Amino acid sequence: MLRVLYFASVREAVGAGEELLDVPPDIATVSALVDWLATLSPTHRAAFADRERLRAAVDGCFVALDAELGQPGEVALFPPVTGG
Image 1 (cartoon, helix red, strand yellow):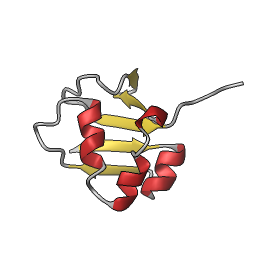
Image 2 (cartoon, helix red, strand yellow):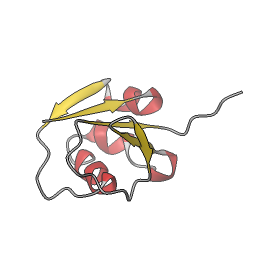
Image 3 (cartoon, helix red, strand yellow):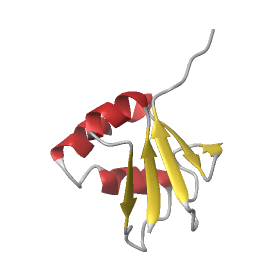
Image 4 (cartoon, rainbow, N blue to C red):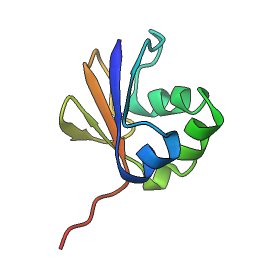
């Protein structure tokens, strides 16, 4: 099982802060995970429609969407973060 965390606008669009999911074994990259997540429901599809506005972290480390997924315990998905 993979714990997928959603933050900010992604959380709002999905309607949940996290999910425990049984991800298919052929999902090899974060991008492929996002593609698969988008098939789960219309709200998931809406949350991941604009990939330019999506960032990811795998087991607490920021990664590019084309990063290899490996066997993580947790993936977080969120919009770009700005600070001030």
